[in-house]
Amino acid sequence: MTTWQALFERASDHATSERDIRDALAARRDE
Amino acid sequence: MSDPRLGRVVADADVLAADLLVGGDARDAMDLVRSHSWVELAASDHLLADAEAVIADLADDALAADWREKIDGLAVAVNHPAGDHPALASAYHADAAHVLSFDDDLRSARTGMELKQRFDVSVKSPGAFARLFDPERLYPEVVGGEYPGPDRDPRE
Image (cartoon, rainbow over all chains, first blue to last red; front, side, top):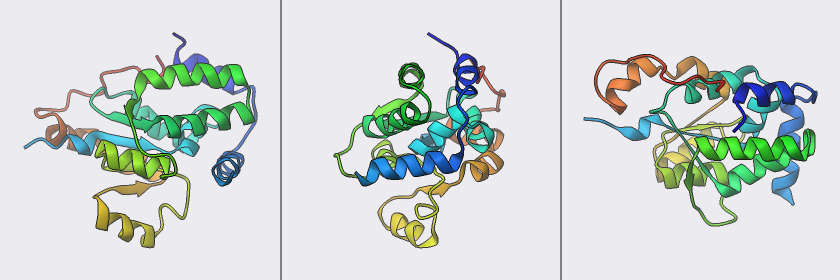
């Protein structure tokens, strides 16, 4: 299984923010 | 007398996604969980599915799937009815003392009072949790004995 460190490194390729995450989660839960 | 619920934590989907995609306070908070085997992360399938969907939306499907496999290995699964708030219901059914969320409404004084009438839980921002959660103080209450320090690599 992959490590957390490897996941964090892959995730660093995707620029996003806490605001983007909150908005995406709110949109999903409002569906 | 030990109180294992003090070592049970629920991180809402926004915190789980931010741990992976942003870092910062969410990662500091989750590192505390990952680095102590006696600190249990509780989560329902509904909660993890929300986080997985947000990760897929903001990053990609492959990263979301690999994250899901990894978090499934860390989290203790709990069940609750569909339609309940995934973080609060996970905490209720896991008898967890801590909920981490970026949601201001969830952390409001009014919500806190309403929750206290149903069960004893504290909803905190990840930053507040990272500052206030004290493993050395809690270890004797949750496990018993002297705190041995972190016992897991949080990046493994």
